Amino acid sequence: MFGDAAGSYLGDSPSGWFIPCMTSKPTTITIKPSGSISIEGEVVLQDRDGNPIPRPPEKHPGILKLCGCGHSKTAPFCDGTHNEFKAKG
Image 1 (spheres, rainbow, N blue to C red):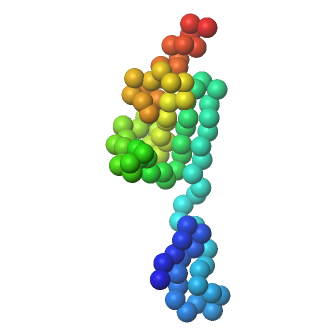
Image 2: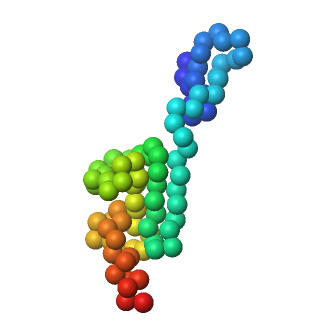
């Protein structure tokens, strides 16, 4: 059979069908005051039709930054444009 996000199928295991199996740490999403949204961990990014969205090169491996200010020229990814608006005050 199949496992799910919380466990894996182990056939006739004495403890039941599923045994918790954490393969990685939880994904963390941080909404920063600057306007960027930082995602650390495994995540699948896709458009509303289910097509994968190619990720740009990451400045910090394993961390994806999405735009939260609405001004990025590389939406949905953060390009740091929020810093220009912060500087203008």
